[in-house]
Length: 187
Image 1 (tube, rainbow, N blue to C red):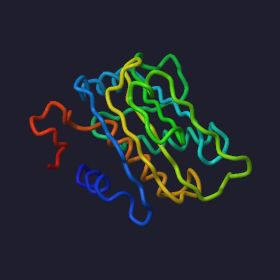
Image 2 (image 1 turned 30 degrees about the horizontal axis):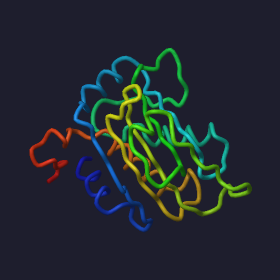
Image 3 (image 1 turned 90 degrees about the vertical axis):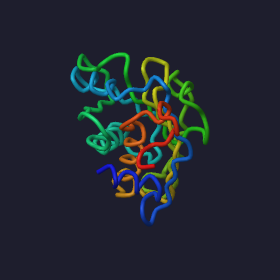
């Protein structure tokens, strides 16, 4: 599995250009944070924006289902709705088609806003931008910005692969910032 993730991280999705432009892991990130959440309940997954114009609940269900099992570590339940099972202060925040660049502090702090697709674009082929962060409160533990081109909708296999790759990068098996060479295995 890690070899597959590493290969996807270098090449993107075959046939569909995808790029993770920037990925950052804070020195406070620990895999034990994932174990803490997994053992106590759900990971709140705030999904802002919808590049396809489909109903938001359907889009959120597709994104969170693609995230399930797509990362290193214990199995997490990603839930777009806050509930009694939500483990505070942890959450994932994903902004679709927001600005081209930002940082984890802005994303975890509640900004920036996403841009809604133009009316009548449901099912249209287009590009997807993503800003995503794994947050503890308003502090980012990990952050990434990514882009995917020529996607027809949330059910497009390339979109699924894109979300799985982004999820794997949000939850690395080790903190590269704590390694002397700052390299994420395989190095």
